[in-house]
Length: 118
Image (cartoon, rainbow, N blue to C red; front, top):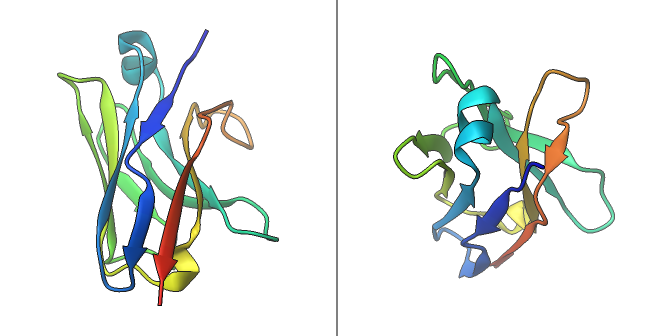
């Protein structure tokens, strides 16, 4: 069973920063690429960022490139999403995901709310 536990969401003013964390089991962390998606009210879920499990290569949506950074800590089996220069349009529920071997990530966390006020 794959469990992804997110934390770190909250309310922040535009221009501020937040860091999301996603804790996984050791098996999940070492066997699957992990990343983040988000879903804003009334919109479909969209890709945010991904980190390759072997190379550590990172990929970002154009909308967050240069502002968000995905990273991982193998000693804690945790993936992070550092979000800087936040904008109101970044307001969404953010989901940690794992296993990009299929069209859509196979495993999803429960989501954490990020709200950015103008």
